[in-house]
Length: 330
Image (cartoon, rainbow, N blue to C red; front, side, top):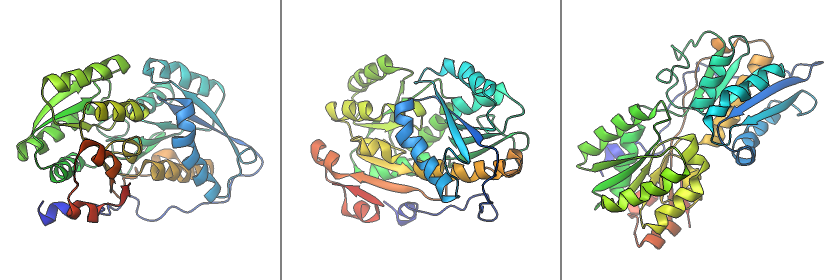
């Protein structure tokens, strides 16, 4: 791999915020009601979403039950339930709605024009139609994004460097995700530059997920790329198991996929984004309008390598790549 490509690993990207956000004193008297809306599982979300958010609130001197309470509504991957779930939060008179993932954020935006919304962990907020301007979102919504325009190219380049014989990649693609057409185009461009062929595997549910791996076998795919998607994160263990069973090395955006048994991940830290969402909630509860808070972009991208998965697949990860990894799972 060329040095200018390797230099992307671990690069720091400054957020759009012009200065660090500092906490004001938690509001006294009223106990704030923080509504949480997500498309995935409530049980899984408690560990992966709410734990870092609560940590962020504690760091700002908020005491749960004294300064604020959390009201959770989760669609359990049935995105058509999101409108009714956000209606329940509105009926409960929440003071702010924190959403996780684009489908939940769009459902909340459509349901209210008055309750402030913090859209945490979303892809391209402008492309998704959440805001029209990153620096000045305006209205009642702001966001914390995990999107970077050249992230797909970097993932493909790292994947090819890790496994030089790669020639044909299956790509998990969710047609229900409004950002996946753009991700697909970016991934195609990156793959073509390296002479890789892509097989788009459209997956909306568990049944299609299983059949996607049948399609990879038929197409003689020798690797799997998982696009950023809430459903895919919720099914990280199942996807990793299917990839291992089919002897497919896997590249994803989030370390959660590697922890579940995947080979490689390159992207931002979701837990840190969820923790940072607390800072925006604090600002809103102490008087700042959501639309006055600029959209925050990821500050760091990390490379995570699973050597246990590599051994199971009979692969040797190049030492040059291991030396650049932010985390190696053995």
